[in-house]
Image (cartoon, rainbow, N blue to C red; front, side, top):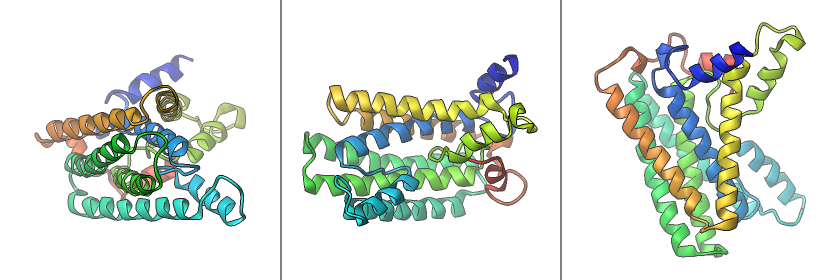
Length: 257
């Protein structure tokens, strides 16, 4: 139990992994953003995710089968917007891949632009969201989350991809002592799971009980704060801005998202 809480604590600091500096806590905040944004999209834009594309592929299958409440066009739009955002994030990664501070701050700044536009659209749309605003919001939010995911992939902080938790949960169980594994790093892996849960909980509560755009406002503030943090702390060229040894995101994929 002591090790578990130490892992949780160290995930929010640079003690356990000084090679990543402030990136771990920043990416944790981005995981909260994922929960906030997907709560908004699922509850106000129909049965569609703008961050978790695995769910969208499943929803697309439901829609193609004629299941009520699902839209082929909405799911396909979200997938296309996310891919476009990932393309933007990939271009930024190619340009700033050797300086992870600039990579994150530039990607977060680009993401913030799309989130800011989405906040304006959500304010103007009111509730329920009209069809015209619905697709504009799917495009804006999907693009923003594609940028975030591509940047997180390149940053390659183990267990912190900000959007995908399937392999994190798998590793938590499969690497545990109960499975005769080598050690699941349970504390570190529980943090992103809890972060997305908290984001989704807060986002859903705000959508259901307050103005629907509040989750997007919080997400925008979090992204902007992360951009400022990595920009300012990365300016002195500390060691963590350099890419980890090996292929990009290789260590992250081995650890699992």
